Image 1 (cartoon, helix red, strand yellow):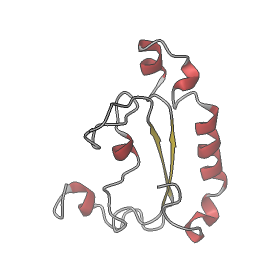
Image 2 (cartoon, one colour; image 1 turned 180 degrees about the vertical axis):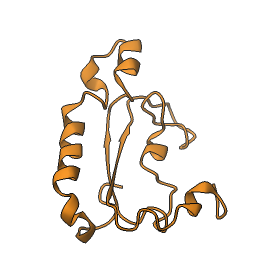
Image 3 (cartoon, helix red, strand yellow; image 1 turned 180 degrees about the horizontal axis):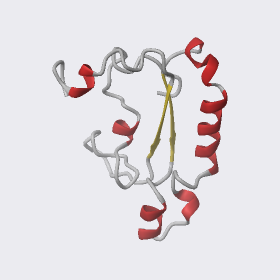
Amino acid sequence: MGAQGWNEYQAGVLDHIPVVLIGGARFTHAEPVNPATWPNDGLVSRRSALAIDVSDRVLPHRRCAAFDDTHSIFVSDAVGLPWETAMTWDPRVFEVVRGAIDGADGALQTPNRVGC
């Protein structure tokens, strides 16, 4: 973290690569909360999944999507939810991934931080 951290050391690596970040927020906690922890998908906070604290110098072109999902079918199953509540099985997530693949060639010409 910070100016000398691993993330900043990666500046330039993704300059010509459009990135789509997908986060889950199935689990929440009553206010006040630590935003580094809540909401989360059972493993990763939405803030971390969407790289909120990563600078545009490191991640210059990103789009974000967030769903009321768990991290995986393992987490959904563990808490008694249907598998479709997991990002790995949610058709809406598949649509975002498919759209990112299909639109990759022109993605760098679109606005930055859509949905972020």
